[in-house]
Amino acid sequence: TVLTLDSIGHYPYAGYGVGIDFKGEDYGNTAIREYAKIQAVMTDSGSQNSSGDPTFKSALTFWTNTGGASGTLATEKMRITSDGRVGIGVTPKNNWNSNYDVLQIGQTSAVWSHRNDSQLLLASNFKFDSNGSAYRLGSGYAADVIVEGFNGKVRIRTSPTDAAADSLITDIADRLVVLPAGNVGIGTSSPGSNTLAITG
Image (cartoon, rainbow, N blue to C red):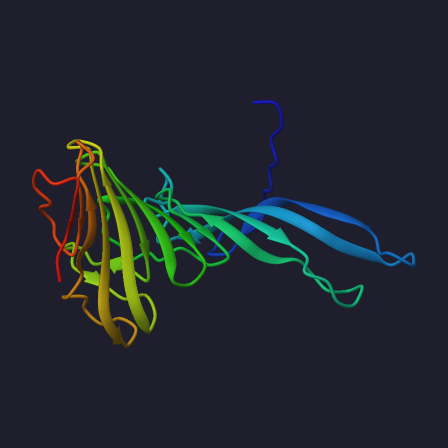
């Protein structure tokens, strides 16, 4: 440990924490503007006992200033949650399936790195419940790209339905598949021995 930031003497509650604030003069005048900041904050707390709070959780947040009057403060742009989920431009959802490591970029785009079967999933407008069922993050279509490292297959899938946010995705299907030998299937999941198989 090279640097320790410690704040004591306050009652801890959700939102309480400690951080680094970067400030400097504004352009064209001597007003001080908040450029950016990094904060470690408590996100969950409960009853405390002599051994500590068993429900304690924290997050690391990153803030930047998008401009405006000299007194305009920085706003949060990235967050790392207690369970390792990362949100850029959005707070990462906490109702995703715990079997996935999650990076969310913006409101409706996300990248999941699946832990169990060497599968990388890049998805747009997806979230998963505790049972693994897929739902839309926002209204509109949904699509993903799956790289299956264990069998060398790449799959591009789409849902043709323009539906409301939080609706169950039931019609997602393979639209393009690349097999380990280089066979490519468009509209089929099994291009067979052909180098390129197009159906539909």
